[in-house]
Length: 121
Image (cartoon, rainbow, N blue to C red; front, side, top):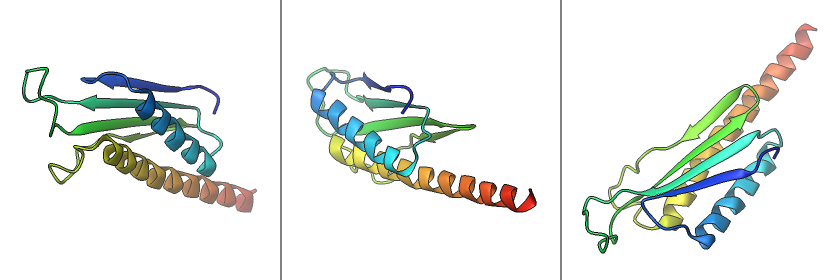
């Protein structure tokens, strides 16, 4: 990757373990596409209860912005099941699984464009 991974934490303290897990997931994405230009990941937790002591049960939201030549792929949606992302590991896994699908689709489209360009040349 040309640029380092940017990881931000909102609504929760920085975690070296979470940061390491995110970096491992980004490395896995690089196996599918060596042309990744940049990657920004936001790990956040929205608190319905304004008390700083109540964090249990609040879902984590992972947003991934992946820049590739001529395009930007984005994952940042809430889970369909309300309690699905109360575990940060599950939230990270689901977000990166979704990004992996998008990236594979983008790579496939680029290969198809390349093939068509070679046929017409």
